[in-house]
Image (tube, rainbow, N blue to C red):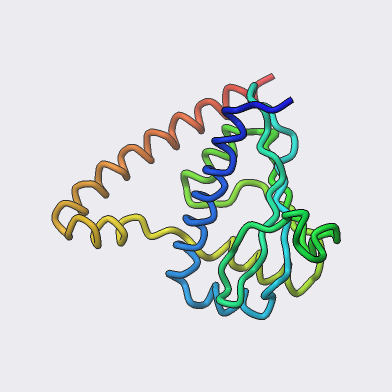
Length: 175
């Protein structure tokens, strides 16, 4: 049964995720250089052990572009769309507060990568080493003075979010 809200929000959220991922990748030439040799190869991102009382996100299939960036893949009209992707990334969502704490501290949530060994090694390197430079983006938009203030506010909000996530994770861990 079609859900109009999901049918509208999911493609928009996917597009925004890909735009953000490409923005982050394009700011790190080492990342795009590592991905360029895999142009045309696909990876499937899946969320496992979903605990939140909302529908889990569906699997997302991405293809590496010749520029070393990402684009949505998986349309049935594409040649080879029925072939399995060369890489499978499984994000463990069993402990959402712990995953949120890790993301807030700049770490990755639990991630399992399977498939082509060389492709997996380079995707793992990119995931482990490339981070979004939010402060740099703010400075380009607002200038250094305003960006500094916004960055300080963001750091305080992130610290508060980390503390909340750590507190919630420790409460949930207790028997």
